[in-house]
Length: 357
Ligand code: KG4
Ligand code: ZN
Image (cartoon, rainbow, N blue to C red; front, side, top):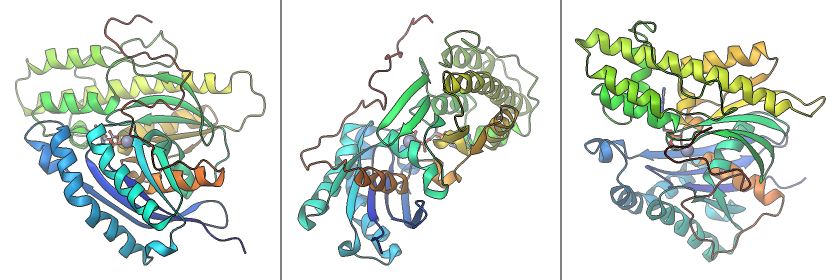
């Protein structure tokens, strides 16, 4: 019988120190043997966002313990591991380097294969851990740092269909939360408050809804939230603003995902229609409901990974390592971390103030 591949994955691209052991199953999906995530929310709370130096120091302090914990919980030791993968970008260089160096050191000392993983590829392939999905599929990646529509054509093969031209969606949630006096990261609390408010109370703008294909923009919405937040009279109105903001986001995502679905199907007959979401914001249940409704209307099967695989984790990095190893995409130990690393290098770089679509 063919040996089942088992990988140790390490993730330190932002404010989560994470390690995980994942094993390939006979049916091609994965079994998560351990998935340890240590969040630094407490460390960054008073600053209202992630402070790179504080994050890097916390990674250095925790990384060894987290890797040992992941191995212990998997009931395996390093000799049973076929390879090591670590996030090499995109992200904060000072943070990435910690996990990347740890991964290289383990791989180097044990003479095991090392895979440098693009964090975005980790998110993109994560739905395949629990589901048998065939390429290509449509992915909406919505996190604190990224907002993209991607056609996932295969491992290491991506076409970017659209992206945000300014803020990431998670950033828009966090900034709105901050204006409402909610501590960082405020996304989950906005979802909670939205349930208590009237979503039609405030009318907020939907930038570039009718132009720019499936590219997105949230800066104008953020400015409108800022203006509105200054006039709020009581807590009830804060709930109304949270609800109105979330409703506006849902309307934007609904329209833009519809366009992305059309683009995905363009010029392709008999293409299987699978829609997948990933990234921390994909934990939001109202966004999930909204997009699963849209998928149904457009006859797409929707696959939404469990929330612990949507937010940053190392199981997705271990899994991407397995997938890349299977097609011989093995890296050497000189691989350096990258702050910017698009999955589709041919996609135009759209971010920038004053950009017109
Ligand atoms: O993917 P992730 O864990 O880290 C990044 O790679 O950025 O995403 C974190 C983001 C934060 O902006 C957080 O506020 C947002 O995901 N988030 C949510 C929810 N849970 C997390 N946003 C809206 N609703 C949620 N339930
Ligand atoms: Zn992420």
